[in-house]
Image (cartoon, rainbow over all chains, first blue to last red; front, side):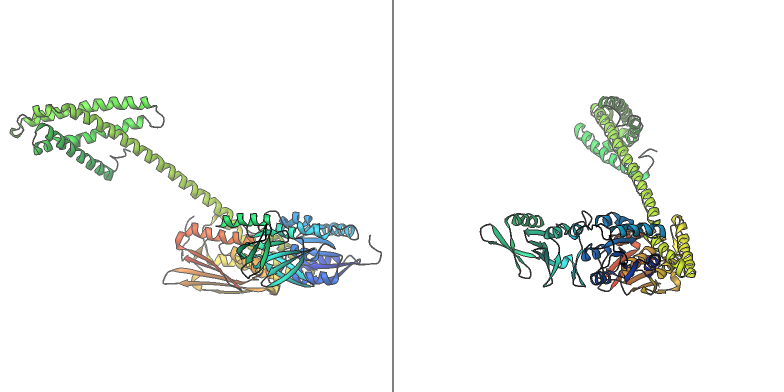
Amino acid sequence: MMQPGTKIRTVIVDDEDLARQVVRELLAEHPEIKIVAECANGFEAVKAVTELKPDLLFLDIQMPKLDGFEVLELIGAEMAIIFATAYDQHALRAFEVHAVDYLLKPFGAERFEQALTRAKQRIGGKLPPASELKAATRAPGEYSERIVVRDGTRVHIIPIAKLDYAEAQDDYVALASEGKKHLKQQTISSLESSLDPARFLRIHRSYIVNLERVTKIEPYGKDTHLSILSDGTRLPVSRSGFGRLRAVLDRKG
Amino acid sequence: MHPILGYPRRLGLYLIAWLSLSELLFYLVSYHSGVGKLEAGIFFFPLCLFYAFVCLSAWYSCRGIPLEETSFTGLLLPHLLAAIIVGFFWAFVAKAWARGLSQLPRFQGFEERIGQNIPLILAIGVLLYLLAVALFYVLQAQEASREAEQRENQARVLARDAELRALKAQVNPHFLFNSLHSISALTSSDPKQAREMCIALADFLRATLGLGEKALIPLEEELSLIHSFLAVEKIRFGARLQMDERIDEETLSCMVPPLILQPLVENAVTHGIANLTEGGWISLRAAYSPEKDIVVIDLDNSFDPEAPARKRGGVGLTNVRQRLHTRYGTLASFSVEKDSQRFHVGLVLPAERKAVPA
């Protein structure tokens, strides 16, 4: 539990000034809470959370640049999170990412206090590991249209169409896009499940490739092949990967 | 109504068909019995014309014995019986006509020569009657399928009406909730503005309420709806929302389907402005083109090209496109374009001035 005397360091993220104002006002009655930052978009939120490491985060979902779930994907779940949004269709997903509570706008003091009480119980208590969180951040049957990557406090957005391939590197994946590689803390299997299987294929234990980039497949060794991408990159194709690749390419004609 | 007697064009076609039959008959008979061609023609032409009208009566027995609900024998027996009776009647008339004609000097001995052919005439008469029966059954089936098609069309129109009503009622609930949240924020910090926002919201809701029953409203009314919508959004987004409007005076009285522009403006706000950290602009133009008598409406907004496409926006655009198509068919056009900075929606509508009853 919390040490007496320490304040709960809180960040408020909402693109609407008036919406931040409501939270600020409701928090004013709680001297144990200290607002350390207010952010109006996803980029600011990632930066503020990475630098300030708050205990509590009030997070809107629909925002410029990054939505609330993308922010969460980049910062991990090392703090208590309370979503505040007018969109009730995200509630299920919010609880899947272990949010403390989900406030539907407009909300009043009573409902807000409930959420705050739950947050205080969570702070200092057991938090779910971050890896568990990432797998759950997307609804089934829905695929990413872009991938967000954090590099320190900077955020890169890679549209799916610009992702050439991904390579597993220990606990990370290296995402190759437009000649650059971006590292993201994610397993390659979790990345695979977030990508549309009609556009991306796992060709190897360590590689996922954008099917549009594949120009040629050459035999290489006894059981393996090499796929050659439009920029000349050569990626190994395992035996089972070759079977899958051939099936997909045959279907496309 | 009789399907042939009731329609002069069909009757004409029917008689022409009979005429060619009568020609066939008289060739057959004159070849067989050595009757002169002219004589055979004079004999057969009125006879066939007469029989053509006799066969029209087959319609009534066809109507009495519907094809779908009768067994094969139940169908065959009465028609065959009728065909034989009518055939005999025709043969009798033919014989009487031949006798009458043979009184004339030119037709000496005509009756005897025709007499040999009476069984042939009888057989052909039976056959022709049966053909007429078949023809009426075909007409009946055609009539039935046309009726079914008409009903289907009507159902489609009704379904479309219902759909339109539903589409029109689609005021985004998120807009409502977000606005109420802003009002609740303002109640403590700026009660005066909270009241203003309440009033703007009420204006917008009131304006949308009565629209369900109207097929068309003046553009001016749609614009005032948009203004009250934007008045609410301006309080929410503050300086982030810049609106620029240029409306031709002549277009204000033109009739448009209600809520045809508001969803587009709402899209521009939620998918354009709301995704831009520094805010953005919306530009609305309405121009009247006197040569073609059309209204050209252009709606542009800035947007973040990196923002992922949202599904709801696509639905909104599809709805507007569908409603325009339902109302105007090919007379209206709808286009969507985007480049790296600008999202453009264009509408072209025929300029209608007077209210058209729904």
